[in-house]
Amino acid sequence: MSLQEEVQKLKEENELYNQNGPIGLYYELNRFINATVKIMRNTSLEKLLSSTKDEDPKRFEKTMALIKNAKEHVADMYEMKEKLNLTGDEEKDKRKPFITTVAQNRH
Image (spheres, rainbow, N blue to C red):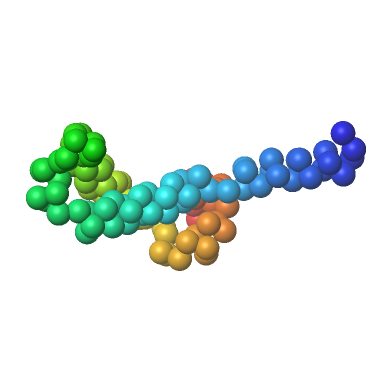
């Protein structure tokens, strides 16, 4: 491995440590919830309760599990948003180094 390749590899590894995992999780949960809402909007209750032989017989149970998970994620997100002091601007929030979100303010 050349010196340039090794430097590049170390830069990429360092970037992983600079990324703020909890903030990333918050925004991924937000995308998950939005995808769940989209599924709900495109699915009627009648369609969930009736199925043909070509459709997944567990579709109702899977949809209900998605809804339940989304509801739990919303509660988690409110707590995370407050603890991480998020603005709602993903790009701005993701630039916050991880250490600044876990370090105690000693002033």
